[in-house]
Amino acid sequence: MTDVRLGAWASLGEPRTAAALEASGLDWVVLDMQHGHFDDRAVRDTLALRRERRVPLLVRVRANDPAAIGRVLDAGADGVIVPLVDTAEDAESAVAAATYPPRGTRSWGPLAGLERTDGPDGRPPRPFVAVMVETAEGLDAVGDIAAVDGVDMVFVGPFDLSLRLGTTVDALLADTAPDAPLPRILAACRDAGVLAGAFGPGVDRTSALAALGFTRVVLALDTDLLAGGGALAAAVRQRLA
Image (tube, rainbow, N blue to C red; front, side, top):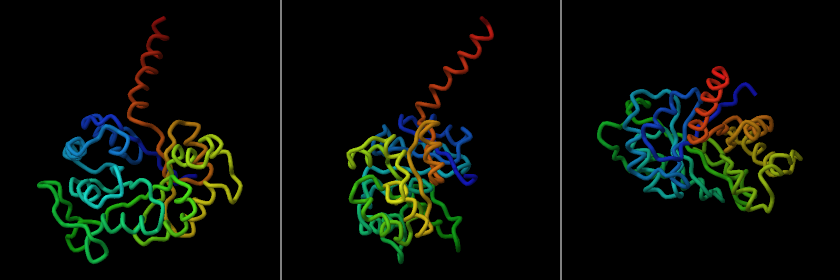
């Protein structure tokens, strides 16, 4: 379990708060455009505040859309998390949208001042591509999805997956049979040599996912980390009592 890297999930859409998460002590950060308050401007403003790349900063885009994927990468994101990937063809579409020719179809056109040229031969590095498996269809095709060249991580949305399977998140986590959904996803990732990631959050669910074998797990939302300030206040009040 030593390779488990814990992530922070930014949903508030506030650039300075999101940028500060890079220094929070967690290992990676996600800006959420699908269900969070991040729009195009908030993503660009957050990325413009970066002075150095302390940890990977990914963006969950709204949909598996080439224009949306290309735009957040142009703005300086280190990679994308693409929701609702149900087939190998969906995964291939996501990889192609994130990758320049000849491998992909991404158009070159980074925003001024944010382009990266620290890849091989002075070209931009290949971005990190995570695809979300969160439906019964995606689960059935997870072996083919994970095997798509250019997929770096299969990321599980346990809330949506449990809804689609007619169960609960806790029941999903508790089912450790070899043919259960989460072990099936982990096996597909191992066979393909890609990372297995998941959305916790919280100590109990994050620990359970890590114990199963997921090595990239979201521990906390930005709202959780802000709420943690209340614990500091409680500690001070207890000392002063």
